[in-house]
Image (cartoon, rainbow, N blue to C red; front, top):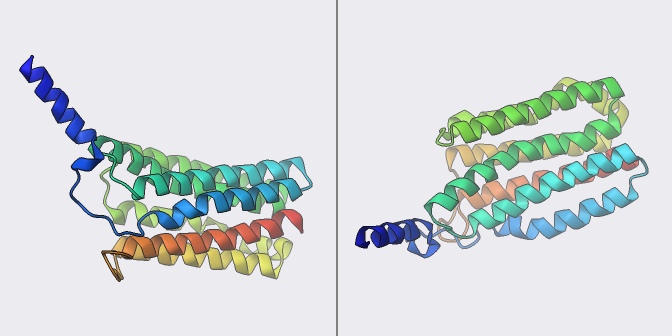
Length: 230
């Protein structure tokens, strides 16, 4: 009986977030927490304004993947939930990066590219995202140098369709798409190298990474408006 109670206490200690003594930066997770309702509002407006059923469905995919990334990231990063819960949330959080990459491509392709190119591009990015998610759950302890380049490579698949995107989408759309990709890439470099780490107490390298991802998302959200409404 005593052994059972000790085992229960041991499990509780693993699950109890108060057991953690490691301090996260004070701003950890707050950028994405605030971005959750903002992204919902911005993309709900896009869904309402989009004139076609296919375009609205594509915007809804972008909305869902954005909410998953920002919502789970904010939940995971602002608090310690215990060892087991943190492992699960970490895998989910990293998986959402792949989902958002594919989810971002969806309205861009549907709104701008010809049908055949749309199908090919979305097949590539969604299959790539699925493979990345499988890697995340099958090898959760993979080092940063393994999965961070995969994010970047999958995110820049659109380069193969750059002439078509520029031709059909226009200059503003193309520049916003590229600017968002650059922001995401710079953020990935910051995350991969854990540098610069300005203030580990308040605003460390991870917060800078989140700031760049948010800037990239804003660029791509605006470009989605151009893609679906112009």
